Image (cartoon, rainbow, N blue to C red; front, side, top):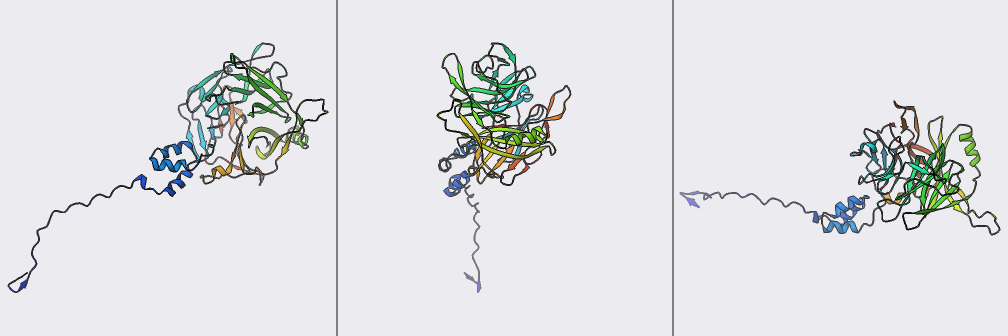
Length: 418
């Protein structure tokens, strides 16, 4: 308005200022569906998917639409009486294996099964047990073997496997490669048995067994001569009694077996170790060649078990079989080797996971004793001959990544199967 020829503005009384409303926090329900689906597709662990599904209904629907995750990759255990650790191939990290009972820390691991189960040699007095790393459940195993002549003798378990996880709904057995009176043989234990046992006739194997697996409906053993013997459990359904049906296969020797054995073992060039793996419903034998000069594994070959049609006029009723060489490719598979616990997995199931998982790759671990011994005569186990083998390139590479112990004071490494 004008006052006295001057133009003036009215003075406004300032009003109290109010703070703007605080911006609303973004809601987890606002994440676009396509992003949720892509994120959940990278969760290969079942537990991680369960956690994501618990956030809200939208996230739960996204997880359910992805499909089932692939089988978890095995974790690699580095035993030690003081600081046992394990390695996760997906995260490529080492973790402390905490809260183990003292006798489990000191135990020698003889085999593993799905669900976190281990076969343990607990002490020098031939004490054995099944132990679950996930729950801490323990099932005692007997310390003696009953011979066909009904005599109880001590045994040493070298490698063992399960017909089924003890925590599952089915009856289960444990089969093992054992040393009895300085001779290697097969031994079995079923739930409720007071001792290890074997069939009443022909239980001893003609050559040293190198690995055991439960395949189909029977335990299969492979020897240093690549012979195959199977034992099929027959659960009788009363008083926990179990029978075993034995089959000795009439193996047609592969053409280069004599050369392999003669050069590597006869001439002292190295050692051959054999592993059994179930893959795509078939039984594989993996032969690992360790060379003394380099102190490491330099070659691995894979063979497939082939049972031949019976001959009508054959007098020998044993089934005929042979090992067929698969060449230098695994057709999209990768193998994890371990006595009594080898695994075959499909590489395509793990696409997109951090890390390098390539087809025709074989992951192997060291199972040797070191030359030096600990005070008191205890064995020291080596962790130096470990790596991954590329079948196509016929070459090995260091694995796992990072720093890990070079020895163990109680056991070789083994796989933690989920």
